[in-house]
Length: 106
Image 1 (cartoon, rainbow, N blue to C red):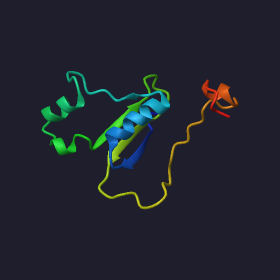
Image 2 (cartoon, one colour):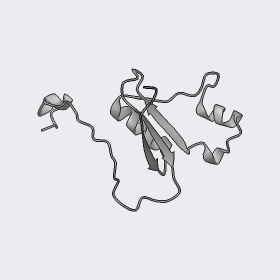
Image 3 (cartoon, one colour):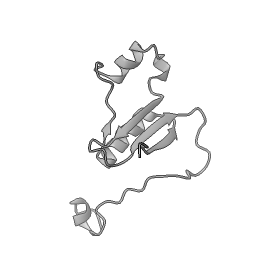
C-alpha cells in the first residue's frame, strides 16, 4: 500500500523516553544515517543547533513488524489525560511467576 504507520508522542524529553520504550517493547533506538557514528555527529554536520539535538527520537522494530514510535519535544507541559497511549500486554494467557519469570508477579 505504500503507507507506513507510526505512533507519535508529544513529550518534554524524547531522549529519555526513547530509551525506556526501546527496552519496554524490545525495539531499537533508530540509528543515525549511514556515514555518521551518532545522531549528535549527524545533527552537528547538518547545522542543527545543540539545543535542538534532543527534539526528536524514534524506536524502530528491527524486524519491521510493529509501527515506529516517534517522540517529539513540545514546549507546553502536559495539562490533561493522554487521549492515545500504548498498553503493553506481558505474556497474555500466563499468570503469576510464569508471566515474568519472577516470583513477585502474582
